[in-house]
Image (tube, rainbow, N blue to C red; front, side, top):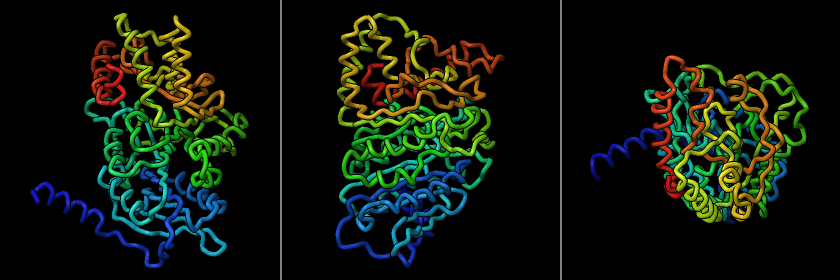
Length: 448
């Protein structure tokens, strides 16, 4: 064993040496479970209190799971307490939360830790199928940025502040997430209960890790999913991904616009001030009046969509002109110009030939078998980052970044730095993100 491997082995031993299994844990039944679901919660940040509420909802939801003895619900949580692995299960007539392992403090968005936790669950809770849910902050395809390079503070998934509420959180890059998940057999589904994760870049990068992806193209209120509704759907045997999305959407659709649409907590990181609490104060007792977008992506259809999309994009690139995006649906309200609607984008490129767009839309319908959204949602980006309501009536259920965007420099964010010329902004920030974007499989496939 070489020196590097010895150091890595020592790292893992030290990291998990304080782990211990609860002595009261019941032995697994002789029969293999139908499904093991792992909900991976990274709440060592300002969402910690919401994680506790969601676990209470999970307990309520598990009461309605059929054949609980054959369906395992595991919850890994890293909040401001000790990281731990929980099992929610029935004991007699009661549903209880059993602490299976306690861990020493560690970075839950590192490849090593995430790989260890997922591997541990899959090994000890063998099942015929597996579901994986990620719960935290999110920013889609954006890199886990180096703050020395950019003022934009973002992460692809998660934020772990190492029990320091005012610290600078660690983040996980989507490219690292792919490498981690590819170590394991393909999951039946992956759910992201986090902001902005239903982007074509994320789905295409992770397409070999799950059959379906359930996520949102927009910001997700800090309350996230109502797990009392959703936990039974996690164990459904038919239309599983669709049932999960429908359960996620249910509470929002029933309560949409029944509260004050002015302020809302969000699972979006506060780019202005990473040290401060990032959730806004909710001004109504109703938790779900602000709308939601949730869609399902079928990974086996993504290559067909990529082929059709590439043909349209390459035809447009041959004209040698940057894309005018002013009429394309923008999910970040022209604040950064990072998230556009894929359907709206392709429609703008193929508008001269409706037949081409119809063929492309037919393929999209197979990629997105279910697309649920309220007419509007709350966006912290709206009104010059003061927050407000934005329309998503024509959402296709997938977002996309547009590299040759003629309007990128028009983003509101750049106006906040009057001491810097616009040309400098584009050179520094746009080039930084564009260079990173070219690492994505979607960018390579499109020929960007």
